[in-house]
Image (cartoon, rainbow, N blue to C red; front, side):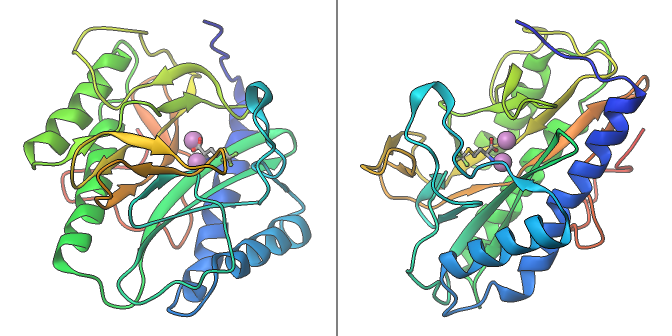
Length: 270
Ligand code: MF3
Ligand code: CO
Ligand code: CO
């Protein structure tokens, strides 16, 4: 494993990239309405990132390990889509839930964050899944501190989500991030306390649990990217990029439109 540790210069770069990624979500929020196509959201995001932010949308043409290049600037995963949904000309409709995942590159540094949106009025089940997944992410974030191990984070997320009767997707995980989009370590959203890599100040990684209302099993669609739940149950995901500080964590992907943390969280930086 090659984990990169960020010095003050790198941390400053990561703070800017993180804030910009979150600001793209703020910018898109009023547009997430019944009737809008995910292609329209993709175009809005591309224009905002490239023209206003003078940054680069990291997903566009991203092709890890010889996959076919990702064709769009953002990921939009609707209802039973788990992650990496490709924007299309299909319109969002009332009651859909959609994850919008934004990664920008600014001055060589990556910021990666996603939120759930409920289109129009959502069902009670949809709202509960989105809220609980948000809390699951934060149960992981609040564990972050030097000396803690990645298994402690995964365990906190898994026990919370499964305790509520939901399931955690195993095939995709959070990741180290910096000058590279996906770098070591892998940040699993399940696991055993006291196992895996020990956290140290200067590490930056994402926490991005995917939570299914039904079974955890997934499958990949023929487009080579979109992941869906095998049982077609609803799936939700939230993502933040975090920094390990000498005393705890700092959430890097915050902006004025970020939803408030759940009540059990006392600070976004420590
Ligand atoms: N942003 C996603 C993540 O959280 C990765 C998207 S890769 C893409 O790691 F190519 F699908 F955009
Ligand atoms: Co990510
Ligand atoms: Co992401």
